[in-house]
Length: 125
Image 1 (cartoon, rainbow, N blue to C red):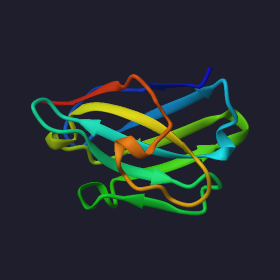
Image 2: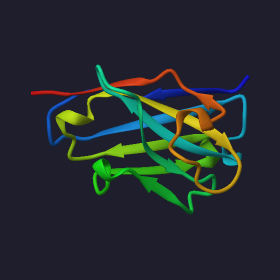
Image 3: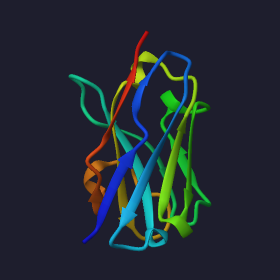
């Protein structure tokens, strides 16, 4: 059974950092590109970043460029989202998703094959 589990969320002050993890089970992560999505309270879910299965390519939305870094360790079946210089607008539930195949997938929720249940990130004073 394909499963993704996010972890690492929490409460952090503006300017702080968090590292989110996405752990895969039931399948070999190296065959999948990974995307991260978030949903803020009262807002639509949005794509944040994605990484190709070999980690050769990454993509970030403009609002997080220079602050978030996506990486992966295929040997451990894990993907990491390092989040620095966090802002109030980064608050939300963060989800990872997997899509089988090469290249960078679009940051569209329905284009992925498997999704985690999310981890909460709250940026607050």
